[in-house]
Each structure stands twice: as structure tokens, then as C-alpha cells.
Length: 263
Ligand SMILES: [Zn+2]
Image (cartoon, rainbow, N blue to C red; front, side, top):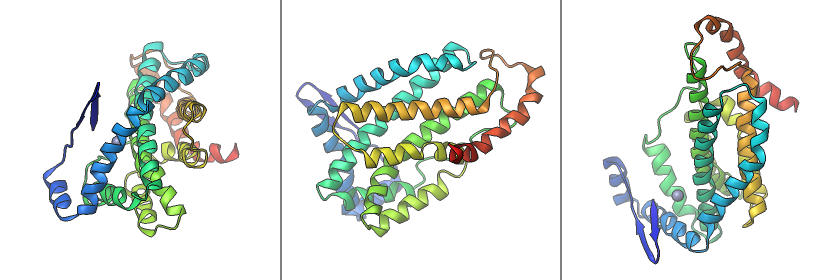
């Protein structure tokens, strides 16, 4: 992580003992890790962080009226979208960062670093998408966590899909490894968010329009997932009499894949 206060920049690197061992023996990974943090500083100085935040807010303001269609209590939906917006913010910053590094010929270095994180280490836990025992509120919480988790993965997926398309075999292997091991419990979310990955690569630009559309797709996919569940929320309180009925509806979640291809 990197922080900027005026003209002063600070890079903080937090690593586990296992990662430390790896970084000591893999110079490429260490360079990749440092280059990534330095790129955040370079891009922040160009005003990217501020622009991303402003574009996220603009995109959300435009999208917000659509949320009234959902029968979910306002504070729950506000918390849900705040969390997703925040995660998407980090994801987009990392996409800008890693794409510029790839264009600068540093792709191999960041690939080593991410390889270490995802293949050699067990840094990220695998969330459970939902459980039949979930209350309605818990279910929304789980969807939120699954989307946050997927957005986190996209920071790693988009740059390496870009490299894989250019013929890098190790990048292809990493992308497949992530899909097989980290998206295993969040298939519905991963499927819904594939658009975000494709868009981030195909339309990549240093422009506000690109960024706003990125956020809009992120928000739309979240809306789609919530709407697909078709649950009638009455706020955060669990209505036990309704619980049983919802069980069958929750299964629709599994059908999202089908519904998406029909579109
Ligand atoms: Zn980063």
C-alpha cells in the first residue's frame, strides 16, 4: 500500500513469513511488488486517485434511482453499494497500475509477485456465496462479500488476461488457477462480473468516460444479482415465517448463469 501526504510518499508493504521467504529468493517478484507500489504513487501524482473517486460518485449518482426498484431497506442497500463502490475503486486503481506496468515491459515482474500471492501463498480465503440457513440480511451480506472478493480478484485477473491474450503462458496458468481455486464458491458472481473484466481490457483508456462506465457496469451487475434473487426484503430483521419460502427462491441464484446467456 502507498500513501501520499503533500510531497511526501510512504510505501507500506505487509507480508507474511511465507511471502518473505519467497521474496528473498525471487528477485523478480520483489521488483514487481515495489514497482506496483511506486506506480500507484506516480499515477496518484497525475491525479488518478482523485479522478477515480469523482467518477465513482458521478456514476453512482446517475445509477442510484434504479435502486428504488429493489425491495430492500434503504440503509441495507446504501451499505451494500458503499462497500462495492469502495472495492471497485481499489480494483480500478490496480488495473491502471498494472496495465501501465505491462506497457512498460514490467508484466513479467508483477506476474511473479501475483503468482506468489495466489499460487504459492494462501492469502485470500474462499468465501461461501450463500447458505440455505442464511437470513435475508445475511444473504445480502454474503452477496456483498462475494462481489467484494470478486472485485479483488479482478485486480489480478484483468492484467493477466491481457498478458495471456498476448501469448504469455504463465499468465494463462495464473488466470486459470484463480478461476479454479478462488472463484469456486462464487461462480454466479464471477460469471456476472466477466463483463467487467472484458470491458476493463477491451475499452481501457485514461478517460473519465471509461472510468464512469466501469463503475456503472460494476453497479449494474450488483443490481442484477440482487434482483435475480427476487427476495422481498423488509429490512434487516429476519422474518422466520418467510424463511422456508425463500429457500426455493434462493436456488434461483444458481440459475443466474443461464439467465445471463439469454440476454
Ligand atoms: Zn495496488
